[in-house]
Length: 192
Image 1: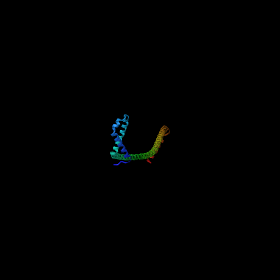
Image 2: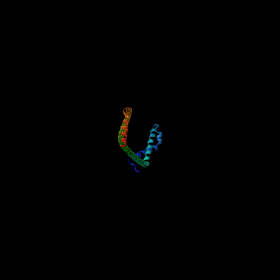
Image 3: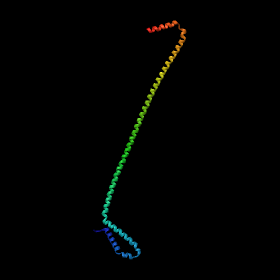
Image 4: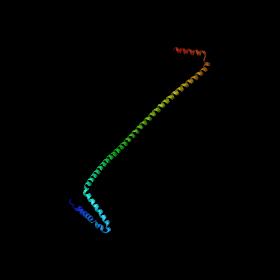
């Protein structure tokens, strides 16, 4: 495998630093003790660069495959969530439509009930008028009957009073001949 460009330069630098650090650890120890933190920092970077190189060399394809798999899983999950969202949105639309239909049905029902109530009210008023007419007519008949009964009772009382007065006055006015003549008239009326 041939390295070109930046990756080739980077690999050469890593190789150079690695050889220098690994081949000359005694020089690092023999040097000034103030150089130790710089050496540790350089070794950390070398280890990091080696780790990155190993990951790039051996784990690039598995990581790519993993990321592609994750991407497809995420795309599938997003698709499922979009489908669920669309389903929920359609359910919300259905609920809103049913709510509108329910309000319309309620308004129609309310209007129908009001119309039926008005019709029933008119029927009740008409029945009340008819019943009042019937009651007035019945009261008028009762009054006429009472008047007729009162008249008949008054006539009977007047007749009784007249008979009583006649009984009181007739014996003084009527003679035996008058009584005989009345009896004869009465008998002739029966035979006729």
